[in-house]
Amino acid sequence: METRIALVGANGIGKTTFLKVMLQKVKPLKGKVKHEKVLKYAYYHQHLSEILPGDMTPLGYIMDEYEGLSLEKARSWIGR
Image (cartoon, rainbow, N blue to C red; front, side, top):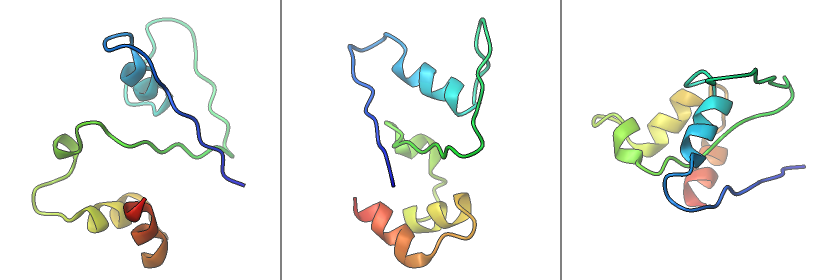
């Protein structure tokens, strides 16, 4: 079963920073974040051009990021 959530709110209130903390891209200023091993985190980056290398296709990028992902599943993700 897949569950999805959406983070919505005004610009500048910390939605992206919150996601970066959850993805362990940045450390929280205070407190701790406990990550459950069974959870899988994924998000759609608002500035894809900043993270997609210029010599890669979106399909190639996803296949590199998610080792073991089938080609069909990767294409399905991109299609969404």
